[in-house]
Image (cartoon, rainbow, N blue to C red; front, side, top):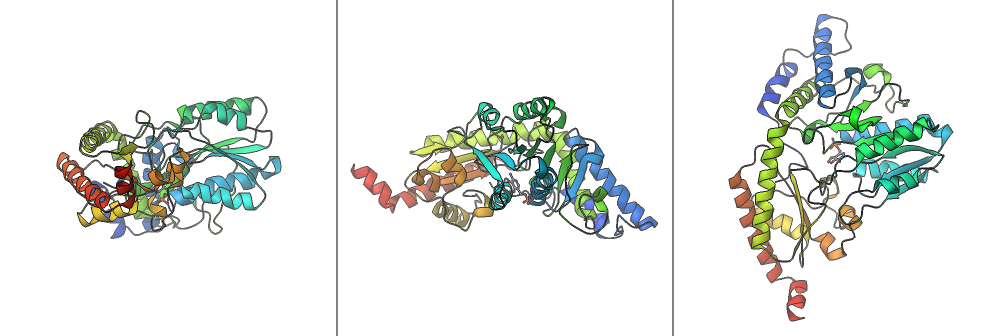
Amino acid sequence: MDHSATTPIDSRVVDAMMPYLTQRFGNASSIHQFGQEARAAVDKARRQIASLISARANEIVFTSGGTEANNLAIRGVCEAAQAHGRHIITSAIEHPSVRGVLEYLEKNGWTITRLPVYDGGVVRIEDVRAAIRDDTVLISVMMANNEIGTIQPVKEIGALVRATRESGQKHLSFHTDAVQASGRIPIDVEHVRCDLLSLSAHKMYAPKGTGALFIRRGVRLFPQQIGGHQERERRAGTESVPNIVAFGKAAELAREEMDQRQEQTERLRDRFEEKVQSRIDDIVFNGDRRRRLSNVSNISFRFIEGEGLLIHLDMQGVAVSTGSACSSGTLEPSPVIKALGRDEELARGAIRFSFGKDNTDEDVDVAVEAVARAVESLRSISPLARESLST
Ligand SMILES: Cc1ncc(COP(=O)(O)O)c(C=O)c1O
């Protein structure tokens, strides 16, 4: 129940990458036939990934994951555009790999406008419009949130950026982090009109440690890795051929099976939510329930700590997350849930359940029973629950 953290590798993806872990071990930059074989495989994967988002193959740059794609997009564009302005617009609910880079830039003299999301967890296009200044060079708003799954108005932002550019602000770019959205909802970079879009392989049934950045033709960006000439001088470093082949295959499967995966996860998610709602009182669903990824359910359980619930569920074999996986281990309440205007108690009691293509009805039923048991047991010892009963 934690597919937003990562996904198991599809056996068809393993089959596709296996030859490149064994006999076909060439370096894609080598001239000889071993190298050419690897180069052809990387190029095929580039086409498969481009086709998932309706881009051109030469607009895809491979990276070590979504984090690097976000770093390359933001730092790369900002370094290239800083002579024209040092202002960036973003949302209050970005992943730490965007949030952290922006905090770093802020310490180095950049001005960051963080747009609120209101209780549904979605930014308002009027706020984006009002935040644009003459010195704005980048807007970075994620496509779908990693904790609550809400889908942001990226198409409207893309159109606004295009219009602003056409009216003379030539150096404004739009980046979107599509790590959670890709493979789960259809993406077409011509509709979204973004200039940069980040992807990660391990959220779509391929191995961890590989990602990609879509960089629209003509966008100026400074590379962040210094070394060889790989990836058309945009990302130095020997390409991880087996992982890239796997990513390509996973993208192809995601495109072919998207409708069926969406239907399956939505059905499981709705079954789960209905059952939880009928079994457990004092819960709050986080994020706009009509405007979110089909596989995510984020629920706050009153009177208990999310961490405690997570551990109870883990002991029963059910894996979930509190906040984003990358910040687990800290006891800080999730900044995303807080951005929805939830109080501290609800922010601390939030749990993300995220479903995948191979989950079954039985998995859902087992999880509901485990949640009901864990919540009952934790509430029976919670001072907050006792206080509420006595008032
Ligand atoms: C929205 C979002 N962006 C970026 C990342 C980072 O991707 P990676 O794990 O490939 O570095 C994640 C991973 O959880 C994510 O959910």
